[in-house]
Length: 116
Image (cartoon, rainbow, N blue to C red; front, side, top):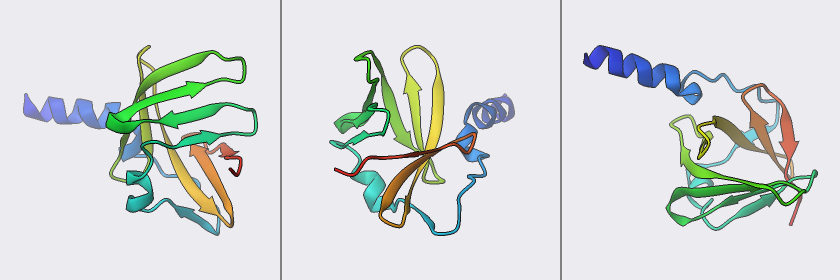
């Protein structure tokens, strides 16, 4: 029974098997930077905003004003995983590339964060 539970958890957690498509010069956020996510809001170039709150609360506000809510956690590989209230989940890797902060999703798409 335990074997099936472990297998189900591994299959349900895409971050454990993700092979992040980084580019030369990409540096994943450090454990200290990941720990400091609480209280930060990242604004992307499409005007969407990802807000990380204390206690693991997360929200993404679209440029239209609509919002999606959930919780975030840090996976062992340093990715940031979001579990939305609607049942959808995703993991992303935040990297520094030169002076830029970039979100890389599981498909390999790159979304730069606007500087503050």
